[in-house]
Length: 114
Length: 116
Image (cartoon, rainbow over all chains, first blue to last red):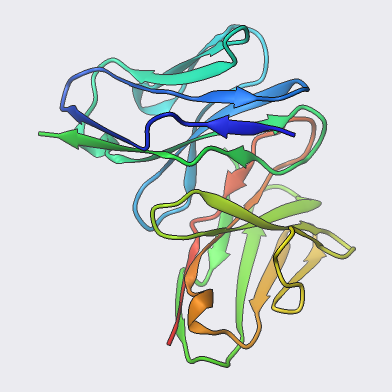
């Protein structure tokens, strides 16, 4: 079985400051990793994903994440945040074995302060 | 990316009535779709896996007779909340992927259900 831990439930940050949202996972099999963003009363939008290859993955809206197999982490970063980045961010894993549901972390609420 | 739609986006109903929520994959076929429920300020909770042409697989604790799932075609899955009660009020989200190993899941915009 897989599990995902998002260490911070809430992250407040000032506008134009850098941010890192932490994600650690546990799995006995190979997994694919995802970050999704959810704006209020909306569904989830894919930010980026790691399937294989380069461990540094770039996504939409200036976000990037780095897969670290030894530390079983997939932290999300942005060098300079905007007010519009205020949202809920979910880290998720998918066992690399077929069309199976994602296993989600509990989410991190990013609040960007003007 | 691929597009998944949900209808309706918001529904208010009286206690005891049934509500049907549709999930459609607009530009790809999906043999499998997933239904989630999300409570305020919480993560998504998987309710069931919807399989085209066969019975859905429900997660432990989810009532099959309460939440009826039908996956009649490769682009449509429906979730019917039968005899809805106020405690069924929630945000329901579906997801689907084009298939394949580790393929990305695309999410619908969600349906806000309020049972009075």
